[in-house]
Length: 320
Ligand SMILES: Cc1ncc(C[n+]2csc(CCOP(=O)(O)OP(=O)(O)O)c2C)c(N)n1
Ligand code: SF4
Ligand SMILES: [Mg+2]
Image 1 (cartoon, rainbow, N blue to C red):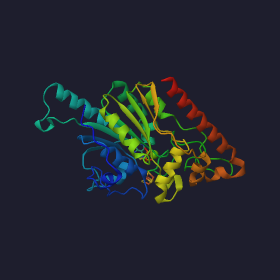
Image 2 (image 1 turned 30 degrees about the vertical axis):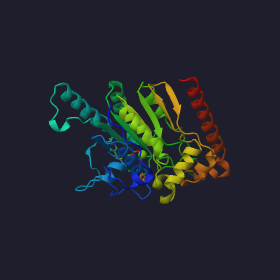
Image 3 (image 1 turned 60 degrees about the horizontal axis):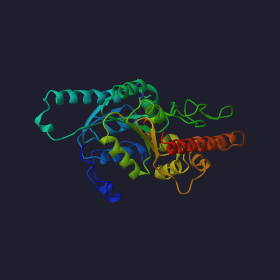
Image 4 (image 1 turned 135 degrees about the vertical axis):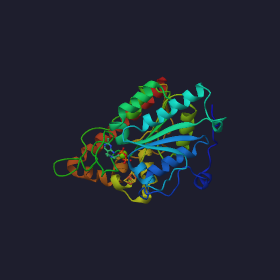
């Protein structure tokens, strides 16, 4: 097992040398950069990284500049997963043949791919599924902002019901997105992956623990990271963590992990559960739901979230 990194306190976290630099073109308040920093800060191991096209890639690698102080592959929208899987397969082959360069002596590189929800839930899905079926020793991190942000805010299969996007606009005849969010965490767990978890940037200790656990796990690991998007969710840039708190404390984004496809553990239980209405009301993408004709959707949201929380707790209690 590779060296585990001690979890730093917040001050150490914010002042330590980064392999993901603060200089980038992401919007002020973008949660993508907070998440990537927390992921990379969780380990001392050498990293081989890939990023699918999306806000993260476009805003961190504008030639001739880069925000990445680690081996980093930019690849197409659909194949961040297979890029690191290929690198991992090559590493294993060289290791088997005793052909690793001397500079690799005593080091255990980790292979991590980042992709947005468009790249993960939709366009790159079959590639990720293939990597998990083949059992590559890699981590896939989805930066889940529930929209194709980089190309102007189109809906994805991660967009939740009732959200207004440029391709599911709310108006006189529509309340916005009509379908429920795809349950990617459960889908990846159903691959029998050794470790799958949902994380959020406001619960950074929970996230770092899960990243360290995932990196110490042999085999494919899926991390679904809630990433609040100030531009498309429509909130003020200094509210990113407040919105994230509402997401985790309303249980719209429950934090939990699933090991080997079966053992489910809830990792965060809010002391003061907040109504889903508060989470929705803090974002412009849901503001039309507060009109009398659409308010029934807020009650449906609350029921769906309550039912899902019950389901998670039942599974945890049953040990499945
Ligand atoms: C095969 C392919 N289709 C479409 C695009 C155009 N494209 C680039 S980024 C992007 C949106 C990315 O959305 P997401 O993966 O959710 O990442 P986000 O920007 O939201 O972080 C799209 C549609 C592309 N580059 N390649
Ligand atoms: S549009 Fe959203 S995801 Fe993209 S950089 Fe801005 S805040 Fe981040
Ligand atoms: Mg997205």
